[in-house]
Length: 366
Image 1 (spheres, rainbow, N blue to C red):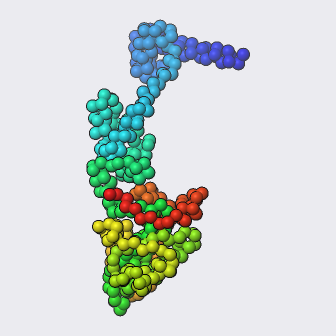
Image 2: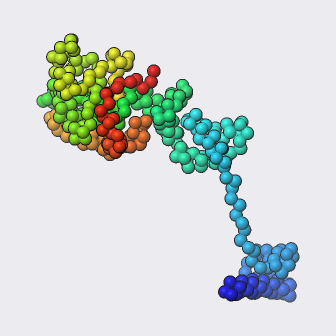
Image 3: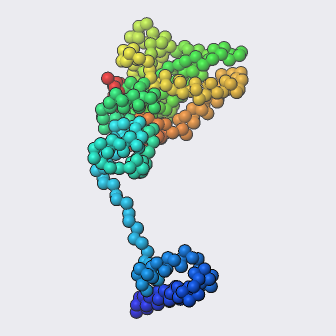
């Protein structure tokens, strides 16, 4: 009963509204002045002429309020077309939306550049960087073959991709170690940075020392690296270095070299880049470039250091940011922090079994 009453009331209101508008039309006819009729009725001339047009066209019904217009939704893009857009975007990650739209047009698919952009944004591929990251991820997880053009684009956006020589399946399986000359501190002398980088998730360690000797390289492993993995019950599988004298002796079979002896006593395999890859240790070389640009080049211009320990304290703060706070792009972390990658591995149900597998050093690309 209430619904019927509501309908009648609405119809009555429509009729009363139509009557009021009709009286305004009649008043204008009687006065011979639209302006005076609109002034008395308190309406504008535009509305008057709209009602007059509707009354002449539709009669009494034209003076009533029109029902709300049905909004026509734009034609939904088919899933097949969406898939084609995503495929082209990954085939040519540097193409813009206009280029993709033109390419679709040649295939007989009419899709505006705005719609292409909306599709890409919806699938988190709105920027060229996002498309390159997705393509790099697919190359790793789906063993997708990359064209020369795609490889060049990824390498330009992510230099680490070009330097990726070896794959590792877990944290600690393969660590890269090296050192480089940092600079000269007044009253101290030459200072070197000894570094270790985990190839699984880019977690990095650094120790400043006044020497390049094997003892400094061992100190970093013993006091920093080993403790980090022991706390997480993750064994260290292999250390990859170059053929520097701080890492190997003339006759490595005698195990008299301090660095090699330390690795042997702790069950860690020692691999060298010369026998495995014609280039240098790419992971740690890339890290050296980063720490130079983002730390040393900045702090040496703003702060005078009088001791190695003072410089080490500031480096430790930067390393914490690098490992625990900073988001890393690339196929290893995919936008996560290095510590997140390590923690994610520890959440795997079979992580302990994976740690028992022998360390394998396999070139990532031939």
